[in-house]
Length: 86
Image (tube, rainbow, N blue to C red; front, side, top):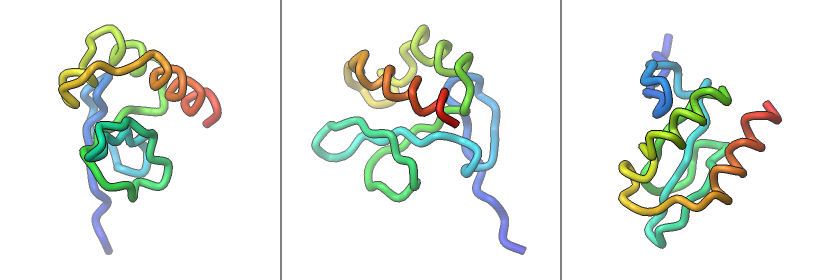
């Protein structure tokens, strides 16, 4: 039986199976995208499908620290939309 990859949520710091989390990617052109299929190239960060984790992520600016760049409100709004749709 193949083991499921485990990743850590940037909001709550809990370790969960990779397929339970939402992947956020920074590519070589410094563009931030939400990776729904988990196949995009670039630096990845993960967050639970939970609005509370997203609020913690925004408040702590942890995503900005990990990607070493300013994250626009537009990206956070896209994340809110993805989390509420699931």
